[in-house]
Length: 170
Image (cartoon, rainbow, N blue to C red; front, top):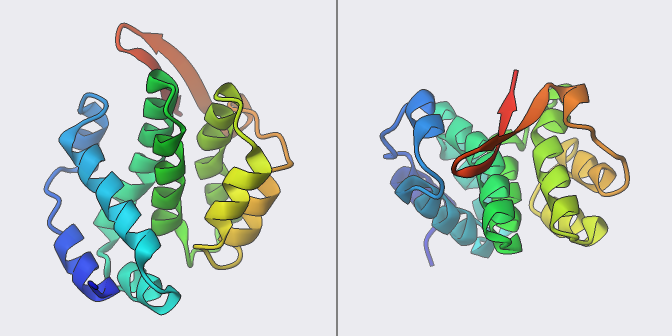
């Protein structure tokens, strides 16, 4: 089995900038790679997940943050809840260990919105994801299962494009 540090070293080679990643079609090859990494992350023991997050360069963690809302978007476009589950793991990778409550909640708005569109059980979805996170993120995940988060309140918009829906912040 791969260690968290080895997985982080392998993951840190993703080349695009954040802007380039935003512009890629969905799903992109990078989305697929981040999805595979999120799946591998879930297979690691807790101490190795911590090692993975600690060893991951900050720019790569930011890619996982973008992946979180991209995967939620893909889930709705393809009616495929597994993308949403994977995206929430990406949100954990991007935000675990941070204590900026507003930033964390903002990262959970699109996944919650998409889960509702997909008629998913919010308590199950966010509860199952919370086991991979530490407080305050684990607490925010559990809270998101029962607290409505409006897109507009947190600066998000749902846009209808030729490719399907897209979520934009700001």
